[in-house]
Image 1 (spheres, rainbow, N blue to C red):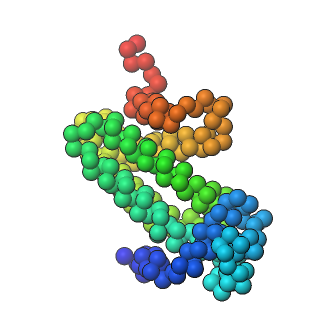
Image 2: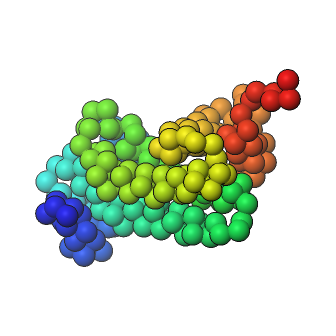
Image 3: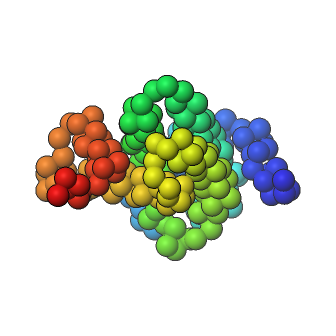
Length: 216
C-alpha cells in the first residue's frame, strides 16, 4: 500500500469537527449554486462560522472544493459503497440471483439519492478540476470492481450466467442503473417512470433476459 493510500486512511482522524462542518456546508452550497457562482460567505453562513474561519482551514475556494472530495469519500462513500454491496453478495447462498441483484440495485439507487448533492458537485466540476475524481479512481472504483466481478465470476462458474466477461456484466448493470437515476432526476414524466420498486424490477428483468423474443 502506498503512502498516498495510507494518507487517505488517516484523513478522517486528522479532520476536526469544524472541518466537517465546513465541508458539508460547501457540498450543499456548491451543489445548489455551482462552484463558480457560490461565495465563501455563503458557505460560512451555511456552516454557522465566520468567513475568516473558513480561510483558517482552507487557503482558497478551490482548495475547499478539492479538499472536500477526499474526506467525504473516505467517510461516506468508501464504507457505504463497498460494505453494503459486500454484505448483499454474501447473502447469496441459496437465494435466487434475481433477489440478490435487486437488493444491489435498490442499495445503489438509495446511495446515489442520499448523496446526490455531492455527486452533482463532483460531476459538474470534474470537467474543470479533474483532480476531483482521483479519490474515486484510486479508492472506490478498483475495490468495487473487484468485489462485484467476483460475484459475477462465481455465477458464471455455477452456470447461472452464460460465459461472459464479469467486468462487462458489471458495466452493463452500472450503466443501466446510472441511466435510470439520471433520467429519474431529469425527465421522469417523459419516460413514464412509475414507482421505484416496479421500475427496478422491470430493469432487472430487461438486464437478465434482454429484449429479443427467444421463442421465435
